[in-house]
Image (cartoon, rainbow, N blue to C red; front, side, top):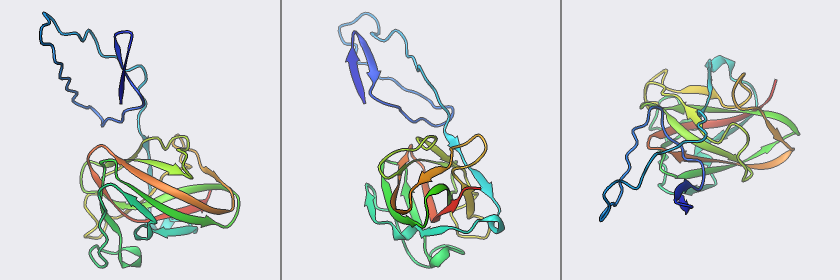
Length: 206
Protein backbone atom coordinates (compact mmCIF):
# COMPACT_ATOMS: atom_id res chain seq x y z
CA UNK A 1 0.00 0.00 0.00
CA UNK A 2 2.96 2.37 0.48
CA UNK A 3 5.99 3.58 -1.44
CA UNK A 4 8.90 5.85 -0.50
CA UNK A 5 9.63 8.82 -2.72
CA UNK A 6 12.03 11.69 -1.94
CA UNK A 7 11.82 11.10 1.77
CA UNK A 8 8.02 10.87 1.69
CA UNK A 9 5.94 7.77 2.35
CA UNK A 10 3.05 7.84 -0.10
CA UNK A 11 -0.01 5.64 -0.36
CA UNK A 12 -0.29 3.63 -3.56
CA UNK A 13 -4.06 4.07 -3.71
CA UNK A 14 -7.19 5.16 -1.91
CA UNK A 15 -7.52 3.91 1.66
CA UNK A 16 -11.05 3.49 3.03
CA UNK A 17 -11.52 4.57 6.64
CA UNK A 18 -14.62 4.65 8.81
CA UNK A 19 -16.14 7.89 10.06
CA UNK A 20 -14.14 9.55 12.88
CA UNK A 21 -11.27 7.05 12.66
CA UNK A 22 -8.57 6.60 15.26
CA UNK A 23 -5.21 6.43 13.51
CA UNK A 24 -2.12 4.85 15.02
CA UNK A 25 1.39 5.15 13.60
CA UNK A 26 4.24 3.00 14.84
CA UNK A 27 7.73 4.13 13.89
CA UNK A 28 11.00 2.29 14.41
CA UNK A 29 13.24 5.21 15.44
CA UNK A 30 16.20 3.35 16.93
CA UNK A 31 19.32 5.48 16.84
CA UNK A 32 17.37 8.66 16.15
CA UNK A 33 16.95 11.61 18.48
CA UNK A 34 13.51 12.50 17.11
CA UNK A 35 10.71 10.93 15.15
CA UNK A 36 11.40 10.82 11.40
CA UNK A 37 7.71 11.65 10.79
CA UNK A 38 7.12 15.40 10.57
CA UNK A 39 3.48 15.38 9.49
CA UNK A 40 0.72 13.26 7.98
CA UNK A 41 -1.22 14.68 5.03
CA UNK A 42 -4.48 13.45 3.49
CA UNK A 43 -4.59 15.36 0.17
CA UNK A 44 -8.11 14.24 -0.73
CA UNK A 45 -10.87 12.98 1.52
CA UNK A 46 -14.13 11.87 -0.07
CA UNK A 47 -17.08 10.58 1.95
CA UNK A 48 -18.56 7.19 1.18
CA UNK A 49 -21.63 7.14 -1.06
CA UNK A 50 -24.78 6.76 0.97
CA UNK A 51 -27.82 4.77 -0.14
CA UNK A 52 -31.52 5.58 0.25
CA UNK A 53 -33.97 3.31 2.03
CA UNK A 54 -37.26 2.69 0.26
CA UNK A 55 -40.46 1.16 1.59
CA UNK A 56 -40.97 -2.51 0.79
CA UNK A 57 -44.13 -1.74 -1.19
CA UNK A 58 -42.19 0.76 -3.33
CA UNK A 59 -39.70 -1.81 -4.62
CA UNK A 60 -39.78 -1.62 -8.44
CA UNK A 61 -40.15 -4.42 -10.94
CA UNK A 62 -36.87 -5.61 -12.35
CA UNK A 63 -34.29 -8.35 -12.58
CA UNK A 64 -33.94 -10.00 -9.17
CA UNK A 65 -30.81 -11.93 -8.25
CA UNK A 66 -30.95 -14.06 -5.12
CA UNK A 67 -27.86 -13.30 -3.05
CA UNK A 68 -27.24 -16.99 -2.39
CA UNK A 69 -26.95 -17.55 -6.16
CA UNK A 70 -23.45 -16.01 -6.26
CA UNK A 71 -21.16 -17.46 -8.91
CA UNK A 72 -17.83 -16.77 -7.21
CA UNK A 73 -16.59 -16.08 -3.70
CA UNK A 74 -13.11 -15.12 -2.51
CA UNK A 75 -11.74 -14.62 0.96
CA UNK A 76 -13.71 -15.65 4.03
CA UNK A 77 -16.63 -17.81 2.82
CA UNK A 78 -20.09 -16.37 3.52
CA UNK A 79 -22.79 -18.54 5.04
CA UNK A 80 -26.00 -19.73 3.40
CA UNK A 81 -28.46 -21.77 5.45
CA UNK A 82 -32.03 -21.95 4.13
CA UNK A 83 -34.62 -21.10 6.77
CA UNK A 84 -32.12 -19.40 9.06
CA UNK A 85 -33.53 -15.86 8.72
CA UNK A 86 -36.95 -14.23 8.85
CA UNK A 87 -38.93 -13.43 5.71
CA UNK A 88 -36.22 -13.93 3.10
CA UNK A 89 -36.83 -14.20 -0.62
CA UNK A 90 -36.41 -17.81 -1.65
CA UNK A 91 -36.19 -18.78 2.05
CA UNK A 92 -32.43 -18.10 2.08
CA UNK A 93 -29.86 -15.31 2.17
CA UNK A 94 -26.13 -14.68 2.35
CA UNK A 95 -24.98 -13.87 5.86
CA UNK A 96 -21.69 -13.18 7.61
CA UNK A 97 -20.34 -11.52 4.45
CA UNK A 98 -17.31 -10.05 6.18
CA UNK A 99 -15.68 -6.69 5.42
CA UNK A 100 -12.14 -8.04 5.30
CA UNK A 101 -11.49 -7.92 1.57
CA UNK A 102 -13.77 -10.88 0.90
CA UNK A 103 -15.79 -10.61 -2.29
CA UNK A 104 -18.88 -12.09 -3.94
CA UNK A 105 -19.83 -12.12 -7.61
CA UNK A 106 -23.15 -12.57 -9.35
CA UNK A 107 -24.08 -12.93 -13.00
CA UNK A 108 -27.15 -11.08 -14.26
CA UNK A 109 -28.80 -10.74 -17.65
CA UNK A 110 -30.56 -7.47 -18.43
CA UNK A 111 -33.21 -7.59 -21.17
CA UNK A 112 -32.50 -4.23 -22.79
CA UNK A 113 -29.84 -1.56 -23.03
CA UNK A 114 -30.25 1.62 -21.02
CA UNK A 115 -29.94 3.11 -17.56
CA UNK A 116 -30.46 0.72 -14.66
CA UNK A 117 -30.52 1.20 -10.90
CA UNK A 118 -29.18 -1.22 -8.33
CA UNK A 119 -31.18 -2.07 -5.22
CA UNK A 120 -30.20 -4.36 -2.33
CA UNK A 121 -32.26 -6.02 0.39
CA UNK A 122 -29.96 -6.12 3.40
CA UNK A 123 -29.82 -6.53 7.16
CA UNK A 124 -27.07 -5.11 9.35
CA UNK A 125 -27.11 -5.17 13.14
CA UNK A 126 -23.91 -3.25 13.80
CA UNK A 127 -22.86 0.33 12.94
CA UNK A 128 -23.20 -0.26 9.19
CA UNK A 129 -21.14 -1.82 6.42
CA UNK A 130 -18.97 -0.57 3.55
CA UNK A 131 -18.56 -2.18 0.16
CA UNK A 132 -16.86 -1.54 -3.17
CA UNK A 133 -19.15 -2.45 -6.08
CA UNK A 134 -17.85 -3.40 -9.53
CA UNK A 135 -19.70 -3.98 -12.77
CA UNK A 136 -17.93 -6.08 -15.40
CA UNK A 137 -14.57 -5.52 -13.71
CA UNK A 138 -14.88 -1.74 -13.48
CA UNK A 139 -15.92 0.43 -10.52
CA UNK A 140 -18.63 2.85 -11.69
CA UNK A 141 -18.68 6.44 -10.48
CA UNK A 142 -19.87 6.70 -6.88
CA UNK A 143 -19.42 3.00 -6.10
CA UNK A 144 -15.78 3.23 -5.00
CA UNK A 145 -16.99 3.02 -1.40
CA UNK A 146 -20.68 2.53 -0.57
CA UNK A 147 -21.95 2.99 2.96
CA UNK A 148 -24.80 0.64 3.89
CA UNK A 149 -26.77 1.52 7.02
CA UNK A 150 -27.56 -0.44 10.13
CA UNK A 151 -31.07 -1.91 9.94
CA UNK A 152 -31.35 -2.63 13.65
CA UNK A 153 -30.75 -6.36 13.45
CA UNK A 154 -29.47 -9.29 11.43
CA UNK A 155 -32.71 -10.26 9.70
CA UNK A 156 -34.13 -12.57 12.35
CA UNK A 157 -37.23 -10.44 13.03
CA UNK A 158 -39.76 -8.36 11.14
CA UNK A 159 -38.45 -4.95 10.12
CA UNK A 160 -34.78 -5.92 10.17
CA UNK A 161 -34.57 -6.32 6.38
CA UNK A 162 -34.36 -3.03 4.46
CA UNK A 163 -34.48 -2.38 0.74
CA UNK A 164 -31.95 0.28 -0.22
CA UNK A 165 -31.44 2.06 -3.51
CA UNK A 166 -27.74 2.19 -4.35
CA UNK A 167 -27.77 4.15 -7.63
CA UNK A 168 -30.00 6.80 -9.15
CA UNK A 169 -30.55 8.71 -5.91
CA UNK A 170 -30.36 12.49 -5.91
CA UNK A 171 -26.85 13.43 -4.83
CA UNK A 172 -25.70 9.79 -4.84
CA UNK A 173 -24.21 7.40 -7.36
CA UNK A 174 -25.56 7.82 -10.91
CA UNK A 175 -27.54 5.04 -12.62
CA UNK A 176 -25.67 2.28 -14.39
CA UNK A 177 -25.38 2.32 -18.18
CA UNK A 178 -25.79 -1.32 -19.20
CA UNK A 179 -26.06 -3.02 -22.56
CA UNK A 180 -28.55 -5.83 -23.05
CA UNK A 181 -27.07 -9.20 -22.12
CA UNK A 182 -24.95 -10.70 -19.36
CA UNK A 183 -23.08 -8.70 -16.75
CA UNK A 184 -21.06 -9.46 -13.63
CA UNK A 185 -21.68 -7.67 -10.35
CA UNK A 186 -19.00 -7.88 -7.67
CA UNK A 187 -19.07 -6.63 -4.09
CA UNK A 188 -15.90 -6.44 -1.99
CA UNK A 189 -15.99 -5.94 1.76
CA UNK A 190 -13.84 -3.24 3.36
CA UNK A 191 -13.27 -2.14 6.96
CA UNK A 192 -14.40 -4.63 9.61
CA UNK A 193 -18.17 -5.09 9.82
CA UNK A 194 -20.17 -7.74 8.01
CA UNK A 195 -23.40 -7.72 6.06
CA UNK A 196 -26.38 -9.94 5.29
CA UNK A 197 -27.89 -9.79 1.79
CA UNK A 198 -31.24 -11.26 0.73
CA UNK A 199 -31.20 -10.21 -2.91
CA UNK A 200 -29.92 -7.75 -5.50
CA UNK A 201 -32.31 -6.05 -7.91
CA UNK A 202 -31.69 -4.17 -11.15
CA UNK A 203 -34.56 -1.94 -12.28
CA UNK A 204 -34.88 0.50 -15.17
CA UNK A 205 -34.02 4.03 -14.08
CA UNK A 206 -36.93 6.44 -13.99
